[in-house]
Image (cartoon, rainbow, N blue to C red; front, side):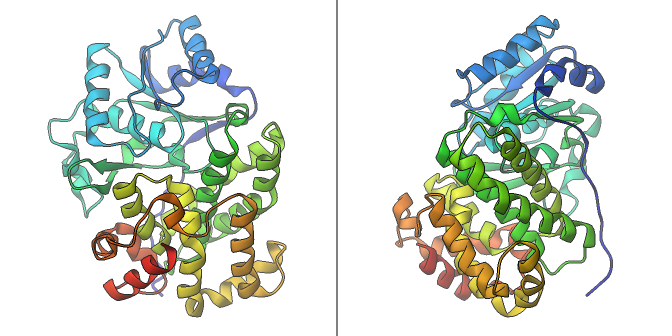
Length: 381
């Protein structure tokens, strides 16, 4: 193992119940006078969003909103968002919502001042240096789910609507200037979203912990993130108003996205093409894929999970952990197979080819090939 790495840690975070009231201060700190709040279609009409727009308006920031955002956002959503940003004369973005709202909001701020197409900035080599860094608008991120951790990320996942491929668009200045993590905003999440987003955070921690790359800080964060999910997701699922459990899940989400600087793996390599082709919920897809991926990676990751299991309150080392994951999924209403989510087995060759191209492959502890990916797709579908 090479003991080298390029490490970066998240941004300024205002964490705690009720802190959405500090949104005007966060905008001022980021230098934003006329923000565009970007969120998804499902959130646009909910009380939590209207209350946030009221806070903006009362502070003289207006109540500009763009919400034409799909669950797996694409470049058409992005073009429409940039058009709304320019038409409204905005000078920054409040990215508000779950992964889709956060990812698209970050990209609106990024692309509003660029002249090249978004695909020119895919997370490949040094492509990010093609962007005009001075033209990137400031971002305040406000998560309303506890899952992706996109609020502390320097990239967004955007689906190409023509090729149905999810692309990771990266730039260091896409990292939000200020994050407001207010667990009260997550109280209204329905059970299936609480489960799916929470298991997305869990998948980030599990894959980061499994990744072979050298990053001891991420390793520690991934371990504690797993513990927080195991201890708190069942509570938040059973009682959506349990603010302590909601707060710990919000921490776990940010921790998962911080930890996966160390790498993701086959879970995400599988779920990205499935989500792009079948429009499935990302976190739920990750959860269905996890048991089969743990099985495949077992020879390489067994020892580290043998050590982790007692801290996580799980007996039986790695084997106990793997059994726990399936039981955990079952207890949260997660399907056992993707077929139950509308995924067929007629496109396995195509999905496997897409998975092999996914950047997540590089962080898997077992080298991914067309053959073992096809086997994984058969197992999870």
